[in-house]
Length: 231
Image (cartoon, rainbow, N blue to C red; front, top):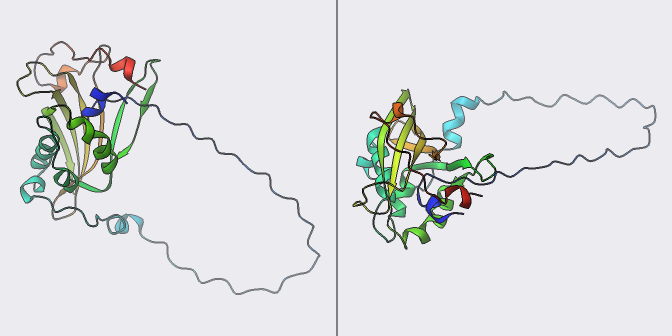
């Protein structure tokens, strides 16, 4: 996995795995004798569960690190916390704060193009991301910020289309990577949680459209080794 691409919450393209399922032939059995079985009482039937009504109970977060109230009381604060907690100079991050922002079984999904131009994605758990990202953060500085956020909201669900820029230092004039993060969020009545972050980094052939930047489009940011290192 490329070092620079995994650094960001936000610029990897990895190989999608294809699964093959084999079917087994049914065994031939000896025909049963022509004997009528005695009727058995019908099993007791239970009403099907109301999936949508019970979904929240089935996947409610358990034993999450306690979040800072100011990190999760609004969508804007949650977005700011996600970018803030992964940003900083060379060194470790506050991973319990990071964990506290995500709902149980949340996923982080980088996507992109491979050298052969096919497209793939890989799904990581929060712990997967921490395990793979921590050694890199210990070696290099990483700062990421949102350029613009477009929020769509209905009742307890929200989606945020977030354009990001990644730098190794706050002093860097230009980002080494830009892209778009698609955040899916949920409010459980008490706070906001991140359900999914799905992202793609821009490349030479696919710059971020200016309509998402809110300003004239500058030259696309594209790391020279992105395509070579993508697998």
